[in-house]
Length: 146
Image 1 (spheres, rainbow, N blue to C red):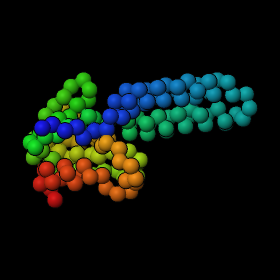
Image 2 (tube, rainbow, N blue to C red):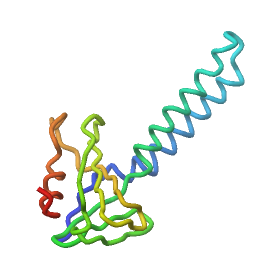
Image 3 (cartoon, helix red, strand yellow):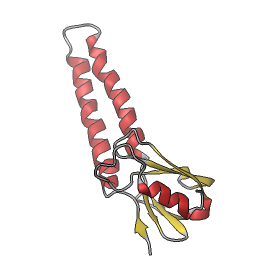
Image 4 (spheres, rainbow, N blue to C red):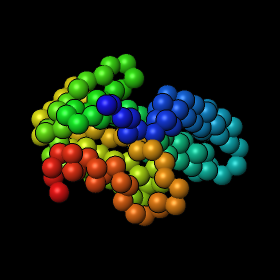
């Protein structure tokens, strides 16, 4: 039985939030750049902030994949294409506890069409702040890493 591990928010973050945020903040940065009549150095603050924050939003949202699993395979999708990868290809599973969404990275022994590491946002847990997401242990056990 195939179970989805990714949060339903993945699609929203990847295709709605990131492009709109980057685009609207970019328009604001351009307006600031061409409309600044005060501090001669102040006109650079908004465009520089836009570059830095947009890079973080792009890095944290656009690389997310939709991940499902059964007893033998991972099913990885970028919403345009889906591939199947045997769970035996998993070499490690890590997560970033410092980002609220706890992105999980599946490191693979072999490169796939989506690369040798897959990042996904697991389903949201309430009050799971700095503890490890259970899906990390589940994937490690499924790959027999622990």
